Length: 507
Image (cartoon, rainbow, N blue to C red; front, side):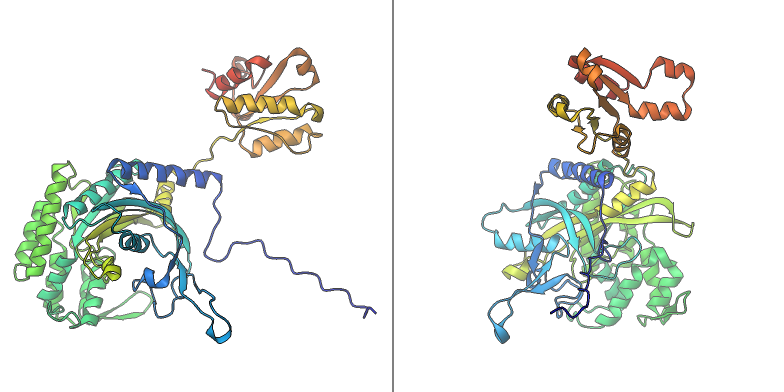
């Protein structure tokens, strides 16, 4: 018996993307594809091979560089495999890859007997980070990396920097709109050693204060000399009133540090000379300076001067990750932020030498260096410069006037496709011809092909130039209309040639 109650309606799923994710449509996908093709063509020219790894790695393989490895589902999208039954269930923790470098380290260790040494690879694809999303900050984004594993020489670092410059220009960033800044972690260590925040024999010595100091150095471009000196000494209160504790240096020490950071001089030779004079008492710092000098010389020999690549002692990247040279690509042109204020676009790529990453798997030191380009940020930069994704022309649409003649229309579209022309047949309801033209317009179609009964009897087709027709309707003169009407009738045998001519602007 029925209780008289109506069955509860099934809840429909919400048609929306999860927070921090987004969908990409035609022009955006095409722009990314073209950018990746341009960048990877440069990588290929430099002798790098493509590598495609799984989107899923074990959390153990991803390693300690995650935000919180003690809780595998923090910072990454992770889950535990189900093995066994009941209380015995639980296998490895797996996670979507956080970047493209950790999978490379795993590959280099797993296939070390099969891969050439050095191994030079490039890779691109989405990565996932389980972090708080914000404006322009998504949980899934694209990276495009290139790395050399097994080369200890800083010539490999110099090559990465040169290749990065070429890749940015190939992607559409003009020379003068970017600069690649190069530093060395050993130089940073030397600075810390000179102010008493680093003991080479005891890396735990003042590690907390050293972390505060290095993070302060990283803010030199944003906070300026005074702001960094506050963070290096007693601390700093920002505009919102939040207070950040300082590293506890004396003011004279902080002033010395910012003076060293200002050794970003008019040319690389002057920068090297300035650093040598300040870090002469630090063997590790001098080692880093020598490496920077060699990198600068190698780049100069190839024609990469300070107009593209400069030495900058203020570059800081990955405190627990990089072991030698580090580099960062910064775009130098100004954009307007959401409040209409001018600001520089900032960093779009970065990398460096990470000689300890593969060692986690093998127990043996394996030198490695590489760079990662943030594809989505680079696309956003091009859009800010007015060179972003543009709506590409859609397919030529063959309209349907008579359903019984579908074979004829399919033959037309087949001829167009065989000639390399993007084309499709309208598969909607053909009764309202106006709807077909609306569809073609929504598809950004350049041409509609029309053949009714009269045209079929004469062996002709009508080509409607949808783009020209729209332009004429907006602003063309009568003479322009007479010179080239937006609709022509041609023999069916001339369909392909007539479409090619119309697509070529009438040439």
